[in-house]
Image (tube, rainbow, N blue to C red; front, side):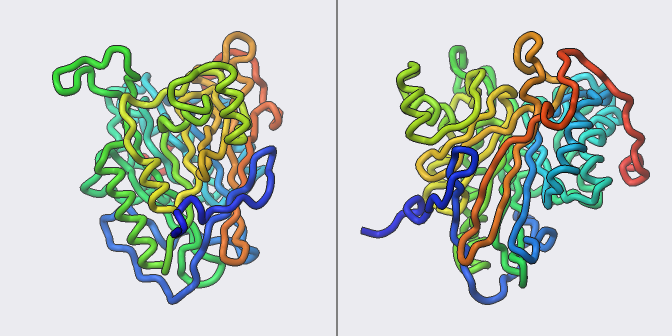
Length: 390
């Protein structure tokens, strides 16, 4: 019997109650350059000489131009403690309340300047709230983000649905071969009120990854493998979770009992909290199936559901949440509102012909940040000339 993509994955060790995943790295000749206009970013990131690399995920910073001062504190203190090689702001970077384009730019700048001022490469995905302000349009926001020296989002490309779909290569410690890839997927905003003449009452009203995006992932995954002599392992970030997150938690498709949840937690070695329902779109896009088929992505991480922090191993692929980062967005009820504000950290290590990935959470409460359940809007940080003139 031939081996499957999932069968090629191995669990190597435990990290915070959940195994560390390893995926293969192929050796071979020097890699060719990616074709322009495909959403591939190469030559910007590299593993350290000791074979390590760290990624930090923030999400749901979700504020207007008067970003809560504790949101910025959380970002800054996380960066100073973790010193990542890449930051992904995984959707809902801003929200409604920005009256004009200047305020949209200021709201984004408040979130990304901590990385930019520290010369830390960063990228973002878009979430359902990023266009809630009248002057906020994702293509314009992406062009604005690309004016920053340390942004590594790809140029906007014709083709797949959404804005900012891309893949960022991380080169091996030596040479120009990609040892790892970070996939960025636009999971959309809201589902249409009617589809094929039928309303969607009773179904989730969030958006979903479209078929052409899944096709783009397949094509670029195959192109990466061709350029680098075999599948390039990686992580995928998208704002809205896949249906498989819910299936994993409940240990099945049709049952939602404490018994089935206990089965899911045990089977998939789930750690972390679930304080609200998963909120995918009305349709399953088939992205998880495509990931299984391609055999390169070994973790898919979402935001969107601010007070879920869990992570598990769903049939060889890690599925998990980053906790909500923004203090201005909804959180837990009552005095606990800000208890779960935080970030997710990914530690990567090249070990022979594999890349080992471990993940853990960082919380504001552990960084000395006040968790009082109130709002503390700050003043917008001045824009630097390249951004002021963008």
